Each structure stands twice: as C-alpha cells, then as structure tokens.
Length: 486
Image (cartoon, rainbow, N blue to C red):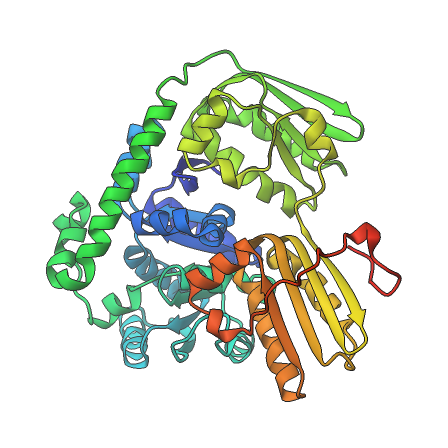
C-alpha cells in the first residue's frame, strides 16, 4: 500500500532514498508509464497558484521530499518522512543501478553544453551505462514547442528512464501532457541536476546537505537570483503550514467504523469516527474491493469526526486510483469542521466533494464535454467541464468532425472549469494547420482559460475572440446540425 503524508494538498511518499530507488526499479519492471516528482517548498508554492501543477503532483506515481522543510512539516503533522530524497542524489544512484542492470536512460533538457558534460560525467562515473539519448530542445513553452520531434526521438530510443531537466513546473507539465504517448516506465523531472553533474553549479558540502542547510550554500552562490524566491517560499510555507497545523490540532482519535452498502448501483462506504493513518489498511482493502466492481464508489464522510495528514494523503489519491480502474470516486462531506480542515490543508479544491449522498449520486461526471455546431462557413466548438489529458481523444474526434468548408472555427471555452496545457497544445497545432490552409481558429476564453493563458504567458500565441452577444444554446436546445454531446 502506498503511504503518503498530505502537505498543503500534495501527497508526499513516506520513503527513504533506498526505498525510493527500489520503487523506481519496480516501475521499470512493470513496463508501464510512471511520473515521478521531487517536490520542495517552491513546488508547493507554485502549486497553490497553479491548479494544473497541483493536480499533476496529486496524480504523480511518486512524489519525494526534495527539501528539509517538507520533512520537518511531516514531523509536525505527526506523519513523519524518514529523510529528504533529492533529485541530485537520486539520479546518480539511479544511473548506477542502470549501469549494473542494463536499463536505458534518456536525458532531455538543459543547455546543450551542460547536458553534454552531464552525459560525459555519468558515462565516466558509471561504466557501461546506456545513455540512448541526450537532447536539448530550443527554449520555448510546452504548448508551442516542437513536441512531435522530441517524442519521436524518445520513441526511437526506447529508454527505461527519462530524465527531464526543464525546471518546474515546465518539466512536470511536459511529462504529464504526453503521458499517453510516452512508453517510458520512469519519467522524472530533475530540475538543475544536470548542472550539478556537469559541474556548472557546485553542491554544498555533505554536512550541509545532511543538516538541511544546502539552501544556504546555494543562496551564497546566487543571491541575486534566489533571494526573492527563498523569501517568498519561506513566507508562504510559514503561513500555510501554520493554518494546516492549526486546523488539525483538534482532530482527536475516535473509534473507526467502516460500513459498505449498495445504493442504486453505487458502492457506498460510510466512515464513522476518526480516520487516521493506523486505520488506512482497512479502508484501502475496502476501497480496492469496491473499485474492482463495475460501479461508482462514494465515500461518505458525513459521520467522520477526525482526519490526520496520512489519511488525507490517501483521500487525495483516491480519485486517481478509481480512474486507473475506469471508475469514478466521489466524497460526501457536509459543510462543517472537516470541510474547513480541508480548506486550510489546501485539499478542498482537489477532491470531488458533495454535501449529501443524493447530490453525489445525481451530479454529472466532471469530465470534458464537447459539441460541434456547424453554421455554413463557420463552426463553433463548445467545450464544457474538465479539459484535461483524458479528454484529448474526444477533442481530437470533435476536431475531425469540423468540415473543411468552415473557414473559421470558434472554440467556446466559457464553461471550461479546469484546463491543462495538453488541450491548448492540441488547439495550437490545429490552429497552425488551419492557417496553412487560409482558415482561422479563435478562442472564446472563460475565466479559467483566461487565467491560464495569463499565467502561462501564451495569450499572444492564440487569436482570441469576444463572447457572442446572445446566450449560447444549451445542449438540449441544440438544432439538428449540432453533434451530440458526449
């Protein structure tokens, strides 16, 4: 069972360096895609402002604590992490294992000269290592960069391990947006690790690394670049960790009782009492059994009186576990102390929460819905709901339905509530193809889309259109020429 501690809405794996390496080898042997992140306070601070990054860290297959503040926070929360596990330490150990066992490694990112020196260092330190690719693409945003060329090179090389050094959050988003295409068992965002390997940036003495003072050494090297980041991270972490600790202070232990029932085809697990780390094994078994059935899982927390950070980490991973089985998980939690706890722990916006069991059963799935409306020389592509990686096949199918006679396509995104770069990248590609044919694609952004375009700094890459003056028709009122909503 995967054990995590939730720190500001991010489940961090309770692993030491040796256990993390063992987990990585299990990923390699599985031959399935896995995303690994090495999180520090800067990751968490960015995730607070970036819903996509937050979601990626929540659904990653492993998140290790690359920083002593996270280790200290876990101890304060009563679910301690054994040690920090940095990318700079993990990559050499992973390279050593790869050299010994014949695993193939691909290096992506960093400046060409830095990547070349890092590759030479690994080949020198670990004789026999198979580095099957070392690529430094031109700097650009992941939505507009030449991703197809990069993906083809990775597919040709067939690595077991992909190290992506784009920096956070670019590297995490790039891996996530190509998860359906990447057939690499271990994909890790490694940040500045290539700089350390190449000798472009010196690491702190071992005693500073072990004492958690490496940040001070790095600050002395680059004070002008790092002072603002460190200041913001310290203020952010102090403020929001205090809120999470304060919220969980009154979570007193109470006897845990789990009851399973069937309600109109749904499997309902009712949790009474205090849900804490020592009760997770029973909950894990019950949810695993429920997810093996062709039914939706509803976790009823109406009578739950307490929650610790270990249990919260498990709850945050439940929607991903359900999706991996082709199922859906929902949580029932009325307004009250526990809801306030989730808000202060930065987890309320990441869980499918409903006030009542009836509401949880009747609500529409939070997935992407697409409608194509054809109007003579113009077409409107209407997107609603959650526009994420899982919705790419539906978006692709809908784009194919637009006739070539449509000289202009307006993509109405006013009712998109959550958006990922993968969706924008596909629209960017389609817009480029249409321009080559003398046609036009425009975005009609809603609030979520506008915020993302501003946050990513790519609004200028798209042609934006104002929303039409009249209200858009609902799917039920759509005329015959509108394709069915899916």
